[in-house]
Length: 355
Image (tube, rainbow, N blue to C red; front, side, top):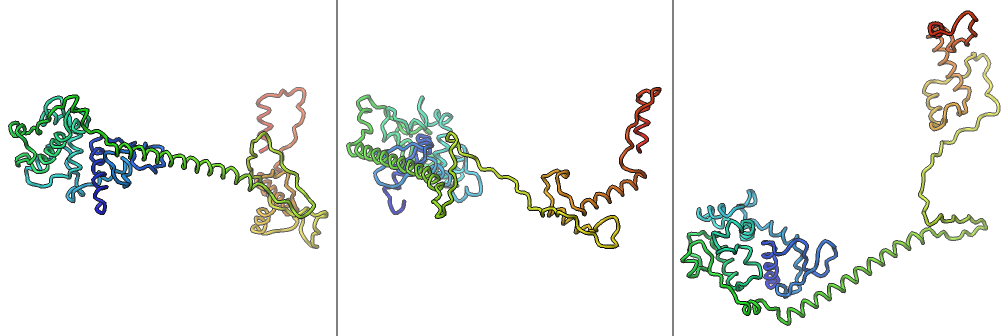
C-alpha cells in the first residue's frame, strides 16, 4: 500500500466500513473469487484502481492484528472508560484507531446520550440518513480525537455547538428531501465502472463453470479408457464381462491358503529298531511344520494329517490317560435292568463312575 497510495485509501475506506459492521463477512471485492461462500460486490465509489481488496473476512483479520506494541502482551482496552482513563493519564495513544472505532461501535447505545442528540448514535454516522456527509465525517473525527488525545484537550473539530455543550459532537445539520437527493450521487464514470466489473465477473464465472465441466468429463473418460485392454497377439481371447444393469462390481479379497505338499501315496517306511510311537520330531521342528503346512481357516477334521501329527495326538492322549488313571473314553452305556428305574440318583452314580 506504500507503493500505491490510491489503493491504500480505497482499502482504508472499505476497512472502516468493515470495522463498524457495515460490510458483513459474505462480501468480496475481487472478481476472480471462486468460493461460493462469498458474493462479489463492485463498489465504484470506493474502488478507483485495480488493486485486490480481498474480502471482508481477510480485512477483519488484518484489523484484528492492528495493535500497538504495548497491546501485544496484554489485552487492549475494551470500554470507552478504559480508553479515557489512559488518555487522561497521558498514556498516548491509549489504543489504536482501529480498536477505538470497534469499541465505539460496540458501545453505540450507551454512548448515544453522551455524545449525540436523540435518536442518533455512533452507527448512524455510517448510514444513509438525512445528514450531510461532511457533518458526519466531522463528528467521527471529533470522537476519535476526543478519546485518543483526551477530553480535556482542545478539539480542532469543535464548533459553536460542541463548545457550548461539552461532550457533544459538532452539530449535525439535517437535510431536506431535495438536498438528500443530491447527496452522494453516482457519477457516469462510476456507473460504467460498476457495469464493466459485473461483466468481468460474469465472464470469469462462465469460464470457471466450463473448466469444471471439462474436468468432470475428463474424469469420466479416463476410467473408461483405462478399462480398455489391447487385443493380444495370440489367438486366445478372453470373454468380455457383461455389465449388470450399469452397476459396477465391487472388488473383493478372497483368502488363498498356502500350498501344502500332496499326501504321499504310501506311508514312509520306519527305520529298523524304531519304537512303536513312530517318527520323532523336536518341539521346534513340529511347531514349524504345523505353521507352514496347515491352513488356519480349515477345520482340523478336514486337514490331511501325516504320521507325525498322529503321533503327536497319540502322545497327548497318553498323557491325559496317565493323569486320569484310566482311558479317556467313558464306558458305553448299558441297558438298565428291569428293576432299576432311570432316576436322577442313578444317572449321577453313572456319571460319577467315569472320573
